[in-house]
Amino acid sequence: MEVETTPAIPLWINGHAYLTVAAAFYEVRNPLTGEVLRRTPLCDASVAQHAVATARAAAAAWAAQRPGARAALLGALADALSGYAGHFTALLAEETGEPAAAVAEVAQTVALLRGELNPVSVESTGRDGVQNTAPVAAIVGAASAPLYGVLRLAVPALLAGAAVIVKPNPATPSALYALAELTARYRFPDGVFSVVQGGEAAVDGLRAGDVRMVFA
Image 1 (tube, helix red, strand yellow):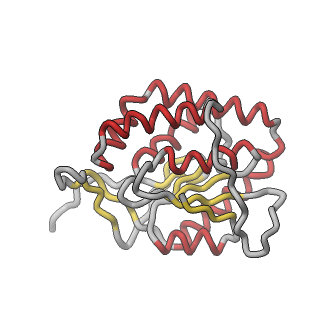
Image 2 (tube, rainbow, N blue to C red):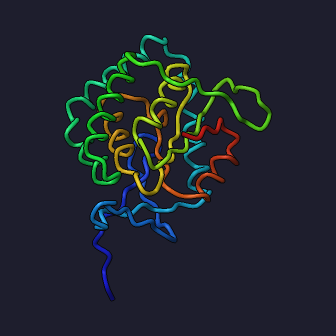
């Protein structure tokens, strides 16, 4: 029996790496060479719903923090990202095939987290249109600008006191997962920033959680 040796990107739920037995995986390839770099697990709806539950449990305490405290954590995350700029640039360049754009994207994301760029306002698309007292925003990423494209939507939600779940595009999953690892090092509360890997089933699971759905 052949053993699969290509690494799989974990999920990040409740402040920790979350390993799941997925029925299928997406092969992450370098667009320039066709090389298979890693695999993205295509988790089912129940895993996404679990992420929603943990995010909702964390959201009230996050919202109760002073806005300045939330901004300070994002600033610390910016400093950490700047320190690992080479690593993040390499991840983005591998998965998008655009090295120059990857350099610019990391720099943009650092500036965004530091409050030097204007983020995009996140509007609620919940079933009843009413913002919850402990809100959760789910952001579905695109293959292009996989880090900055999601963070420009996530930052205003986090600053406003919402817990955030991001679902990267399966073709470009690594930078957002690596960013989630950094949030743990810089004392983000568990459950405030989560990463759910997957495809349409994961999106359906997030929708079933009655969260604010936003598409990058």
